[in-house]
Image (cartoon, rainbow, N blue to C red; front, side, top):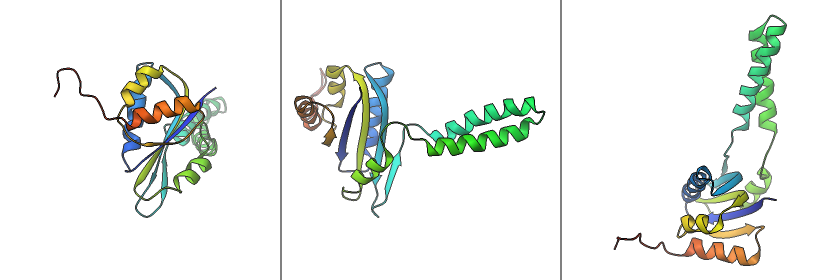
Length: 169
């Protein structure tokens, strides 16, 4: 079962920075992310979701492939490509994996302008190494499906000041 973690930041760019760190940790097999979305509320109060996966483009690519293949069978690959890509793009735009978009927009709307919110679905993680990397990144834990104890540990790590590396300072 995945755990939902929502962390709010006081500026528009910090959530994206932390998501980038999480992606790096995923490449190192220290965390398995099901979804990671950054919601930004701009100076005009408009909410913009920055998804990890672009389902419209993925759907268009997949649909284009299958459309071309079917088009070859009926001796019209270009028509098949066009129809398949269009259908794939529409189905990709209508599908939603991971965290519900309406939930994210609704929660992000409650925050002040020029802020960002990081929504993460974590399948599994190596907690000690992940927390070490996130130490001092700031943010306020808003919502989680973690235990109260784990949520408090996460908030303490986010709020802690970073320790200088060996040989510094």
